[in-house]
Length: 266
Image (tube, rainbow, N blue to C red; front, side, top):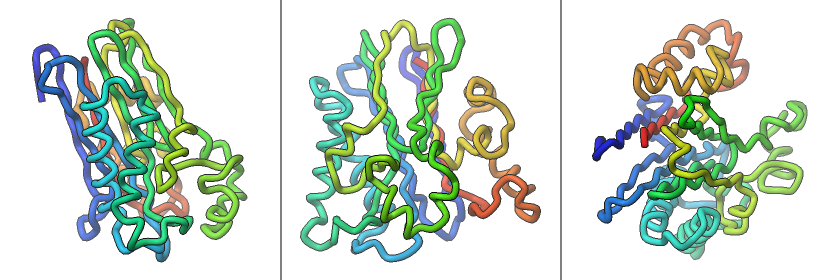
């Protein structure tokens, strides 16, 4: 998509064609022509029942839609306030039918960016990544690294994660049914003239850096700029296939994960 000097690109692909894509991606450009926003969510695939009648895809579509609408229509709210309201709105849509207190109630990571003529505001919650390219060409990764900093021994079983780490102090946080989790997000702002481009990636696409070690975050954004969002996803898929048998990089992880890349050149 191009408008004036702005260019945006969105690629979102399921890990397996027989399963629905649990990621969500959106770019919105208000009719006023001033600024815009992007939303990227990575739904957390549950290993078992969730206490909810709805799928993770249903949840990310609802939450992503609410985030997109609120970010465009409520410029006076902070991004944390918008995330809080969107979580509350989504929870209200199924609180009567579902057990939202279940630790595996549908949930997602989140990246939210809003830009205006003056500023670029951002929010990251859990292990999706945001890359900001500055006017001088340097790249600043914005990461919520709480999950990555946990000892791997603590992540041995899903039961242990649910009981002691998921959406708990000392663990990590995702957007689920509690609006107060928005206060745990990594947030920030930069003058508009200092941000040249940005890219938001779910961890399925961020494997290029985090799992396969093909380059750093600056090289990752450079790849997206040169080959497009599709180019990054295609490279990740090729490396996943090459690692299918040896599991040198993926270990116990699933071979393919939903992968989403949103690129915006401001």
